[in-house]
Image 1 (cartoon, rainbow, N blue to C red):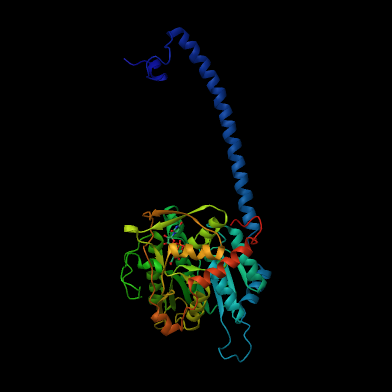
Image 2 (cartoon, rainbow, N blue to C red; image 1 turned 90 degrees about the horizontal axis):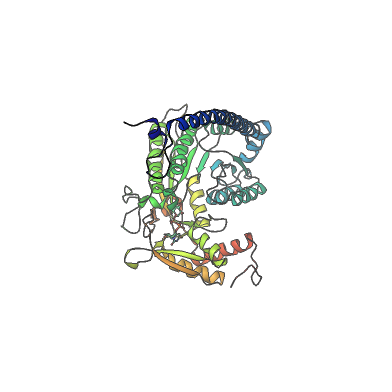
Length: 439
Ligand SMILES: O=C(O)[C@H]1O[C@H](OP(=O)(O)OP(=O)(O)OC[C@H]2O[C@@H](n3ccc(=O)[nH]c3=O)[C@H](O)[C@@H]2O)[C@H](O)[C@@H](O)[C@H]1O
């Protein structure tokens, strides 16, 4: 029969000596006495920790509340000023637009906001400045925008109250929706962030747009990745997009379906743009051309993925200025939303365009061009492409965008990377010939 001692001690024979009953009782008594003291101490510690944590969360919540980065009369004045078009009266292309740009402190968002502002349109930005990549780069972009009179609200597209407030303050004519969780391979590390931004955030934004009066026309960033395993080249908007290779691609494809629903039910004017691997100055540090540059300059190795049967991977790399022209062309030709009070009054445009460069370049070629402009040799590790959502190649057919938007890319990868390298060296303070420039 099992006795108490058996339960109190481990079953491994020989490790603990089983004592006789009398000694055991005394031991147990002492043990319980010290256990109750320990229990009281533990209670005390738990109480202290709990009160510390609740104090911290109070400080946190109240500081968030008091430091809320939006709201108030001064804020509203800034929003109105930033949203006001400044085209000269009587200009050929009308009075100008008021555009809400989401993801304004992002790569494409910053360039588009600047271009809109420069030609006299009103722009208000929204960005949550998340830490997917170095937020100081996003802050620097915000400062650049601010110096050109573009106000960027620090807020999330999942914040329906903020969006409603913005539409309350300004009757935006257009929304350029670029806020998203980007990156193909990161989706395996943090899948929830893709659902949060690219699905939930998109729906919150569309709800705000459908409720707005007047409803804005929406132009938003889809992705070349929706073509997934499609192997018909070049990729045309009519090709199949039901075989995504990554969760990122799947959320962008879902975005195309979701925006279609809002177009169909509420009469929102929708234009989805399938961007093909956009690069250039002020770009995204998580992308290959950017991280390769950083590593090459720091003398660190780079990993170059290679496809099946040693075939090089290739991308239809597209320069940012060409993408900006495509975005502005889309805004200019968007056509109006037709709903009011959440009700559709007639059919509204629903469009999808490829914005690519039409000349794919292999990744090893990209590296050679970087080496040339940096004047530094890369230390390359060539490895088989891991099964992480990558596709072997992309190649855009841009006939539709050419016809309907006047889209005509003019910058090849060599010229574009030269401009990028120039920006990179200056932004990160490299001086050719100095110590920080390894050759
Ligand atoms: O068109 C899009 O819709 C997407 O474009 C971009 O994705 P991708 O085309 O995958 O760009 P990017 O990461 O620069 O990799 C480029 C190449 O380098 C290879 N690559 C990458 C990293 C590495 O360490 N080694 C490597 O060989 C890699 O295998 C690939 O062949 C955007 O990030 C994405 O947000 C989305 O907008």
